[in-house]
Image (cartoon, rainbow, N blue to C red; front, side, top):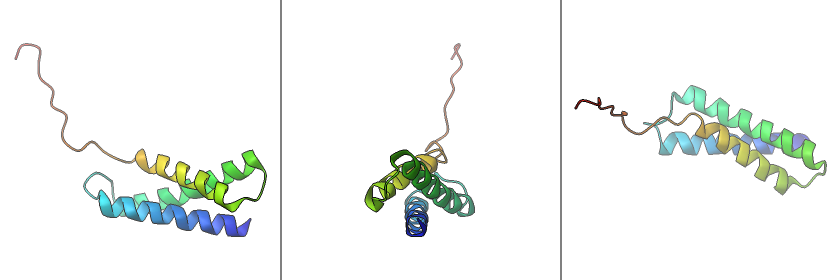
Amino acid sequence: MLLEAISSAILGLALAWAAARRLPHRLPARSLVLPTGVAGGLFGAFITHTALDFGNLFVILIGAAVVSAASLSLLVRPAGRLRRHSATA
C-alpha cells in the first residue's frame, strides 16, 4: 500500500511537472499545478485500489495517471482571448 501511494504521488508530480514545462502560458502558477498533480495521483490510486481491491501496481498506476491528468486538465486556460462580436457589427 505504501509503495502504491509513493509511486502514484511521484507519477502525479511527474505529470504535473511535464504539463507545467510544456504549457506554462496556459496554466496557473506552478505552486498550484504541482500539488494538483500529486493530489490527483493519490486520489486516482485510492479510487482504483478501492474499486478493484487487488494489488496490481500497474493497474493502480494507470488509474492514478488518468485521474491526475483529468485534474490537471481542469486547470488549463484557453489559448487566446475569446472574441465577442455584437449582433449589430
